[in-house]
Amino acid sequence: MSDYSISAIGHIQSPYKQKFAIPRQPRLVPEAKAKLIFAPEFNREEFIRGIDEFTHIWLLFRFHGTADKGFSAMVRPPRLGGNERKGVFATRATFRPNAIGMSAVKLEGIEYKNGQLSLLLAGIDLLDGTPIIDIKPYLPYSDAMQDASAGFADTRPETQMSVEFTPEVTYFIEQQTQHPDLLNFISNVLKQDPRPAYKKQKDGEQSYGMTLYDYNIRWQVNGEHNVVTSIEKS
Image (cartoon, rainbow, N blue to C red; front, side, top):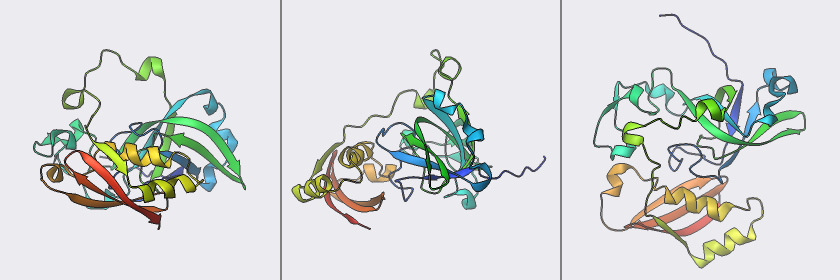
């Protein structure tokens, strides 16, 4: 088997600062905005000329947060509650031989600021700092296969999770102006129920924390109800 060397063309500047709470697929949280910051070698308009004619793009990336942990032939997909094993090539698990992933995301614009070229993206599901190794335009007539089926992941994951914010948290979010969709963003992240599968089987109140953008957020889960109890600058 031949070895190949692949260099990143850029990296993602994402609101997700830790693996916990990242949606398990792209576009499940539309409010998740990000930037693709091009590396110096590719920081030229020629590389993306015409890309603004497309509404969505494919990102090929490296799972840099787990690449050093190696790979497994069998994994436990969260969609199956972590109770059933599948072959890694039958899943989108992170523990892959080459640690390569892909996401179809919305392209919202192009930014050129202080000499830095960036793509503005939405519906992202990538950890902050993720290396991007390629970009391809999304082609609806070819990429969206209407007669396709997807086995154990055939339907969009849905939960019955509800989300409530304490008055203090709501006031804090309403006063900040940097992220106008912050309340909806937090709400939709929690509606995806980011807890590990084994935690979902436990009864009683559970407390969690996550970092989105530069905010530390804490919430409590009781059954299928979330209460966001605190938010503060990290």
